[in-house]
Image (cartoon, rainbow over all chains, first blue to last red; front, top):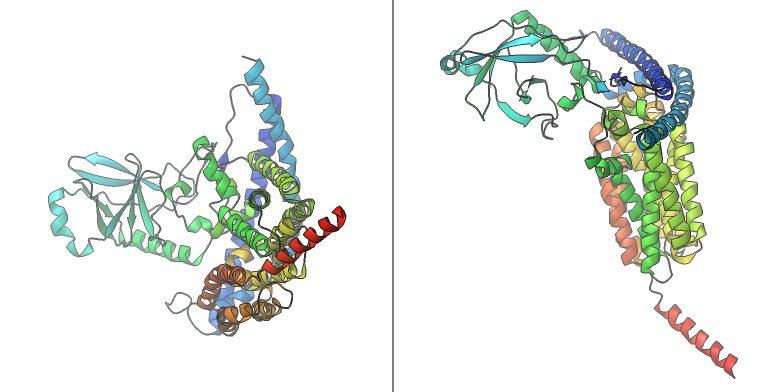
Length: 122
Length: 455
């Protein structure tokens, strides 16, 4: 996947709120990684298959220097792939918005808690 | 928190007598695509004689963790010397090659065996075909672990990038044009208020858009360096920025201009963030909604000046609406692979013929609308004549794009669209009908009214 892998730092004295927030973030991040890694792998594999099939139809070998499909031919593949994956993306979208917005409030809580600790616990 | 790219391997440099020897370091990443090397001890005396024909042109790129210079777009292979944090770009590789550092006396020999070299070549070819961001790193910062910390010195820079400052600037420009074309007195305070308000509202809309689209932006080469994708700002920070700038912007519009302007601003903000952004992933109709978003700023400028929306304002908005299509369709034409993989439903992927037709249709529309401008009282009759060459050339580029439908015609259409709209606005302002007679008449009217009241 093209998402940057993140390692979450666990502070020495992590409070309950921070722990909950970190676990939520980690879960969202892992879910995202899994989805996109899977999706991108399928995309490149299907693209290779498509290119191979098209080149066979045109009776050219895959690795020759002139074996490049034109943008118009490739656009058939892009359209087909997009349409095929539409329900998947619609689902992912809904889930992503839900997870993303759900992370905002715990983030805010952690932020407030940090300020509170800085002001009153020292 | 640290991040890492799953691709490159780093080579550690050991100082060994007077020469440097490369050994691979597998330590960094799990999925290494690493090339082994035979240790090849060579003293500096041998460098010149051994492989003169294979001396590659090495450009000494940058020290440390900076971006590659812009002209080196296609980077086949780079060498990151960890200890000295030096980055060297290689534009040619072969089985054996040497690297020289202009700033020091040392040279480096890299000897890759023939089979590994063949493997490496294969890898590079495959990467060129795959256009995903992971296979096209543009900076070493994409390949090494980095801490996700907000650098407070760069806060303003991050905010500019979060608000897509260039796009916001153009939006503000169109709002100023709307204000300039409106048939009422020029009030410098009102003008500043509408500029500021529109800028803040647009910045807020763009920030929310970036917040919603983090995983999709990281999939596309064009947007993979956005602030939230890279983690320079936390999502909460971005949302707070958007909330503050949006509310301040709308208040400035409401108080500094008038409630109609603020209402238009709020409508546009909602349309962009809550309608256009989700729609991009569901239906191609998003382009039409996005064009409405682009057409509203001149209306805002006009309303700030006169307090109402006259036919002239609608003509101006219609021209902006039509302009969005050739602009966006041309841009999206070359991004089809990225859009397809990221799951965006755009005309260029879903219905390429429609894409080209619509672009052409709207270039013709702009030309037609410019003839309607004097009828609505927006400009003098000279305006359609003066803008005709500009519009005809734009239509010609649209026609070429329709006929050829390739990357070069789309790029020229896109580039000209960026030139076309400022020039058109300039011509509009130059051809603004003068209202001197009106003010004189109204002046006379008020004088007579006062006289009749006194007597």
